[in-house]
Amino acid sequence: MARSPLNVIILNYGTPDLAIASAQSVLPQIEAIGGRLILVDNASPDKSAELLGAWAAQRPTAPVEVIRSTVNGGFAAGNNLGIKAGEADFYLLLNSDTLVEPGALGALLTAMKERPKLGLAGPQILDESGAPAISRFRKRTPFSEFVEATGLDFFYHRYREHVVPIFEGEADAPDWISFACVMIRREVIEEVGLLDENYFMYFEDSAYGLNAAEHGWRNARIEEAAVKHFEAKSSGVEDAAAAHKPLPRYYYAARSRYFIEHYGRAGLIAANLFWLLGRAVNYARLLTLKPPKKTARGRALHIWASPDFTPPDMVKKP
Image (cartoon, rainbow, N blue to C red; front, side):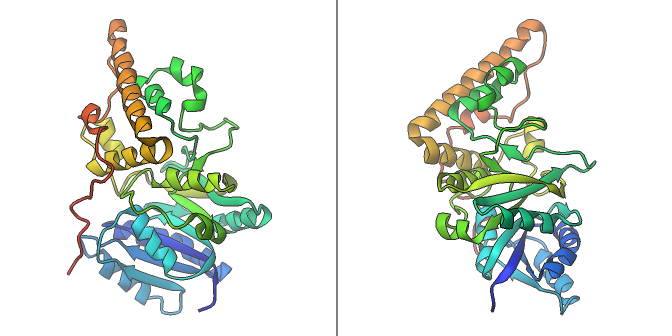
């Protein structure tokens, strides 16, 4: 099979309706470019694979392929299956809970072709109301954990270089960008490798973007492209934190792996101690009769999680 100009990979886990809606939003642009759409079902516990297969079967002439994984290996592993399904000049990883706005793929491809050192490009990410969402980020440092845990504007302004999100209006170049929708150049994958499957879910995007940057590749958001993202429909992690519910163990395992990879075990210890210090500062809000900022239940203990945790559903289906 000849190399495709663009392969778009949509990873699904238990959200077939969202994945199909996302596929329908992007398929016309893929066909216009002459690319391929690869739907990967990550061993969903429901009828997702059958529903995706039926949708593809209704379009026998469309450049659509459905891959059924026998194991839920996580975000990185599932996307890697899609990347390995066929050679392409560019790969677009697209969350199942997204809708691609008209012209987005063309704008991303144009930027990539005009800027040869641009290795990863993402669109503007819009929330459900159509407002811009945060999609550019700085490198997370151990001290970033302190700044974030304080929840106080004073520290956010004083130590801006350690604030991970880059807010609208800030001109800082991103160290990494959102993987809700990201286009990756083939040469980046050849040089940096596939996504790190040791990250089951979370932090694999920042780790990959930073690794690419260390190899001289740039990350950028392309303002002419837009994708609507229905936040956290697949994981619920953000909602859990806001509701003071515990986060899944794989989140903390990925966090530990990230800090060890980029700062060593001493860096993980420093990050955890900084987080605890920041949390203590946050509780000082009680002196002004303001409640402390909510965080995930049990986080003070769970941040010490081993990076080698394997989720129980990472087992092969019969």
